[in-house]
Image 1: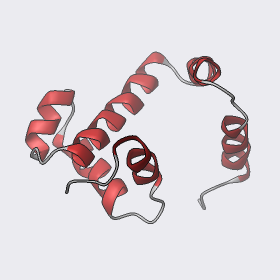
Image 2: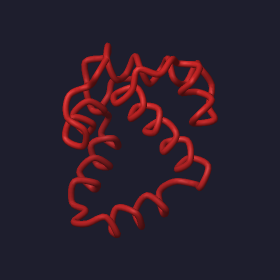
Image 3: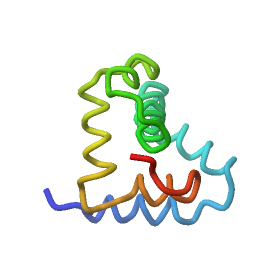
Image 4: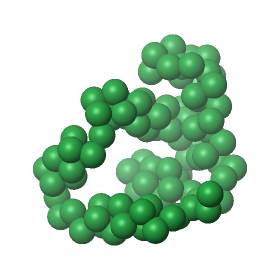
Amino acid sequence: MMYPTKNDKALIHAVSLLQNKKDIECFLRDLLTSSEIEEFSSRFAVAILLWTTKKSYLEIAKEVNTSTTTVTRVSAWLYKEPWQGYSKVLSKLYGKSIR
């Protein structure tokens, strides 16, 4: 399946219309289950640690309470894949990656 699909584009557009943190919070809670929000939050926490520290994958996995497989995937999305979504957000939040 090619990304983004028509449905993906509709979701992206909907998110782009949200005006503030409260609106985003409410939309995410309606859209996702608590488990899905927790999983996304864990991935983002991994991305933050990869961006801002030189901790090992094992140290990050233990700190976030996730698997090293998840850390490896997030690292690939963060540093190797062409979309660069994580890096765009993280560079705005924390500046340049230290890795």
